[in-house]
Length: 406
Image (cartoon, rainbow, N blue to C red; front, side, top):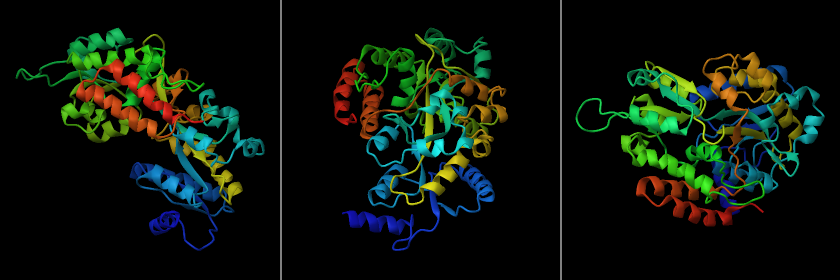
């Protein structure tokens, strides 16, 4: 079986079979053509500063996690690659990544203290750093200003009670056919959409000590709150509107409010340029909280070019590389100096994302990757099949026990 995997990867062209590699291989996923263009621009700058480091950029356009796992399993992983924050604990616990602490200690120009505190230990396991947070995103609140004016509303909702009441006011039958065609809020039946509300209610999926908490009252109540808006007809979901995702519903002007990350901004610019929208911090529950996403740059233990891989990592996640990578707003900087230099703290929209760093909780789950599929199935059962929330989440908690990391 291992031989078959090896042949398959050779076929895919991720490395030259039977030939010794002479360049540092750098791999990422590819979300869009714009993203790849910015990556290549940043790499060109690196090449100009470090001509002594030959490298190959080998993006993976699809099935990224599966292909990275295959490459690690066959001993042919790239020397430097991206790793999603939510799955990083599994990789770190499986001992396939190189600790980076010694590299950082020997590279004072890297200035690790320049990172926002929440990202300094984002990819730490048993006291060692295995990845560097190259950028971040976070859930914030988007709202349609025109719909707000028409409903006599000025400011966005500040708490759960106002979010519910505003949703009622903003849900309308605008053409008089007896059917709702404008909803106050849109909810995607996904675990990551529920999480910021759960955090605000004192809930979480799993504690640092390894206790599964998704079936406890705090998480159940947050899910019940969101589901109550859907059941009461003042919120919708993308499937009900014939849309692929919640951003699509918002861009079509079929809902007034949405929770999303900064990736929604270029989508709205391309698909609904006339939409007048505002961005605000998340409506607050018992406390301020939101969900932050980050991606690490990591070096596998099996790499034979660790020194050159670190030079690439140090530049790309350093002040110069991060400035180039984030200046367009496609991603947000994890360094304080870069956020200031790029003007994000003064930007009327992006400063909302920067403010969220102070109370954001990282999307990082100390379980094997299968936890996500189980959780998604549970959420879809609740929203699409009207399953009992408390029973479903308690059953999910039992199921997730077998996915905990040792």
